[in-house]
Image (cartoon, rainbow, N blue to C red; front, side, top):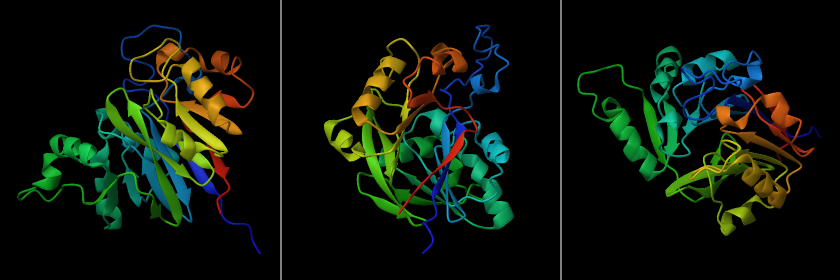
Length: 262
């Protein structure tokens, strides 16, 4: 009997809300010629059985999909309502036009409220025929299935804002958090590949710092941990990576790998 197909994971973007390099900044990270120091806004591609799911669609969404060779899309999942995670939603129109299909948008009530403000023409198009064609699905604490994959929502806090991460088999993904509740930590038990946000070296009011993320990662105990949602204040990619524990590393745009799923 053939082994089950693995889940393909690709980091479409690993940067914070302003991206790296930042406009006007002359720090060594923003001036770096290492492509791993160049970070678009955070987004993740999940491919399984030939179907594509994306977590978050920020301002760089079109460029990210083109670079990754994504020409079809089933679902966009929104972790939370900040603009760097929703601003690229209009780009699903290409899927609507070329493939003549609608795209599922799975998001919480709070995120939907923000999307309605950001893209009012989706919901009240009037005689405008070019609005994105989406099918809304509510996201809450209940597990759900997409394309044969079971998603377990992971509730975390981004200061006072509710954010959803996800566990899919042995893979778990959390962005934009500075607190993980005990119940969510229980759901993370046994995960083998972990992705966790780590904005910068110094403490931040709504994101884990690198040291805080390392301690959380040690507590989770995954075989491999990648850090994402990185700002220019994290430092140079290669230099930081060389200082991390053996089973941890900074993610970078375009990094991909497969995770077994059964």
